[in-house]
Length: 131
Image (tube, rainbow, N blue to C red):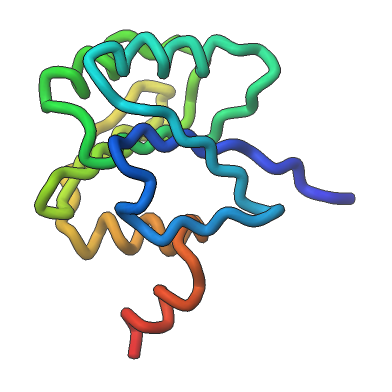
């Protein structure tokens, strides 16, 4: 029985920010960030044919935009939302035990760990960081 591949949406200004692991097991869709970022994200999340596992905002949203995006998430979306700042730190919104969202502040190492643990970065990069 094969595991269904879920989609990671990356909103960014430049897809070259990280060495993303785009292969058959990791489906990553890039959307262009901008002033209407929340509209693009909401359209993708409301698309019934998409199984979105997580949303990553890669150096592409102010704190205010991120909070507006979180406030407007559909109630049925239980995936992670990760905002990565210019200094590599970030904020992770995840679903807690009771179904409510919780917000975590992440250091740059925490952000990289999250991306590596979910196999979103290429393996070669992961091995470089460990060595």
